[in-house]
Amino acid sequence: MHDTTWFEIQGIPSVFIASSEFVDAADVQSRSLGLPEVKRLFVQHPIQDATDEEMRTRADGIVDQIIEALVD
Image (tube, rainbow, N blue to C red; front, top):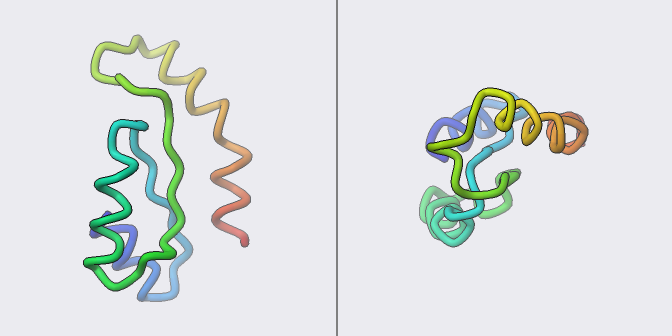
């Protein structure tokens, strides 16, 4: 979240991506960093034991949302 916020403040479109376990933490942290509206997307948790193919599938599932968030 720190990096995403920093890039946004610099005028560089960014989007925070994490697993769904971190929705609440992302809300709290973005507010504490002064940018509560920072764009964020979440994939299904857990990811630590996901195979490469499972991770590709998750990424493929949100790629359009990532692009939309970056150009919005």
